[in-house]
Image 1 (cartoon, rainbow, N blue to C red):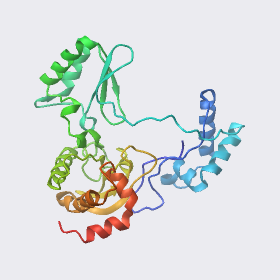
Image 2: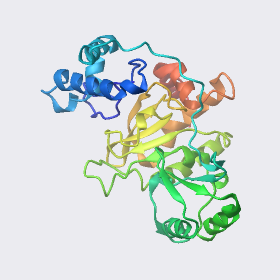
Image 3: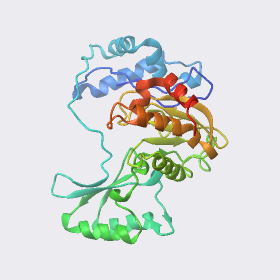
Image 4: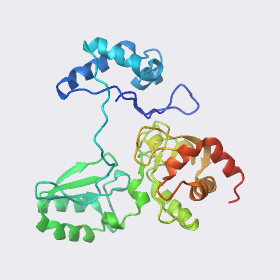
Length: 322
């Protein structure tokens, strides 16, 4: 797949987030040569006049996937095979306990926004060091800012859980699903591109969202929420069901309509300049519309927004009294 990318700039329509297109099927022996051909295509045909549009996604978008494939094939020297349907699979973050396949176990630990730290009773940094020294556990960083501890002997499971409890680290069963699904970039004070907060306020946004869902008698619902302090998209907000993208001081562009399993599409900007202090007033009508208008209990928030579209969301919200 080629042509995906998150980075964009507010109020600059020539920049946009984009999901990747299907290029085709490649045998494993040809992977490196195809990658070289893709890079050569971008090198020779990518935009070199405007830095903001120099990314491959804009070349794929402007040419179309068929023309882009033809260029790649001209460098490769042979056709790329048609896309093949993938074997059925399920999106999973692999949190919690799982069998590893070799007699050992692995444990996925949810790490809020990827921040490994000691903070009061929550002593994750010390805990990970102790687990590593005691049980010789390997670590795998996940794409969702969490950690998988691997190569754990079944006999050591209770000891691992005891150390986690002693350091205030909850198992996944005790983590709010909203927090489990969420991601935020570091933003202020670490990133010079940040317009406003993300990582430092995300935990309170999760708490406020849970309060709002409870108010609407939707306390069991799960929504993939992401937040960035600027439009560059480092926490992949444009793929999420609901996203807060920094647009000003304590103000966000609200995105909706992404896939709950990150499947093949981006969302869209529902509303600009949503204020930090009262974003619930904007989100509540969307949640209520979802509650009353969904096709059934399995239709996720992102899928619902994608199905009904922007105009329907705006119309419903305009008639809703918070």
